[in-house]
Amino acid sequence: MLYPRIIPCLLIHNKGLTKTVKFKEGKYVGDPLNAVRIFNEKEVDELMVLDIDASVKGCEPNYELIEKMAKECRMPLCYGGGIKTADQARRIFSYGVEKIAISSLAVEHPEVVTEIAEAVGNQSVVVVMDVHKRKFTGKYELYTYNGTKATGLNPVTFAQEMVRRGAGELVTNSIDNDGVMQGFDMKLIDSVKQSVNIPVTVIGGAGTLDDIGEVVKRHGIIGVGAGSLFVFKGKYKAVLINYPNPQEKEALIKKYFTYNK
Image (cartoon, rainbow, N blue to C red; front, side, top):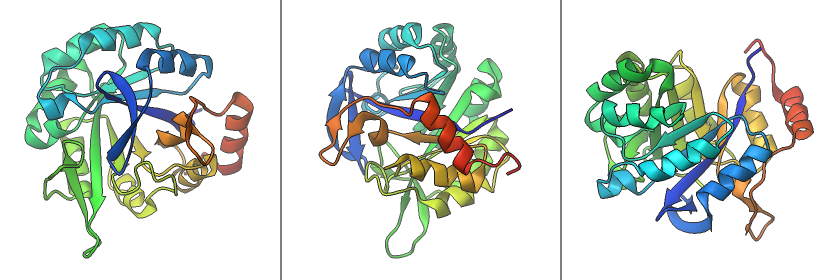
């Protein structure tokens, strides 16, 4: 039986882990390889690692680091950052990475989404949508390059285009809720989830396990990612890698999940 996935999302900046608030104010939270080892012990469902420097700086993926993470990782690993070609995707997959995530590439060269899907399989291609809600109009707009470049694209329309292009999964990331830890943007999640027939993962806003539960209650089989929730502890946000233990996770799923969604 399929169940919702609870996914730590780690951001790499200057080769270390960082955690942002609304895509700004990055705080150093540790070494990527050490975090992978800890999450191994906690038996997480899946791990998403995004290098937020690579595309902005026009760099290739850090293959050395990716290979080291893949060797350490005992759970499915999704990597994103700097991927521009199908050949790069093949190289990353050769290390044992299960999924690759692309963002600005999908906007600027959507045809490459199809090329990568044909090279490594649709189920392994994840398109990340960083979305900002405009204050005065309330409209949602897709942004790229760590939230610095407005695209003018509607996330629902773009999501449907990515499905046609061959993406196997979508990630909806709320820029406005990133690191705020006050809950998810349910309207954004609803609009994207209801518009496509492929797996969707949502990020941006988890402050408690119940925040994750509310998304699961609403949408059933869905991926729910979190950054701050799994790297900070307490009101002063002391750095502590954490994840619900098997009993806590089972209780959460039992409380919120209905399979017939």
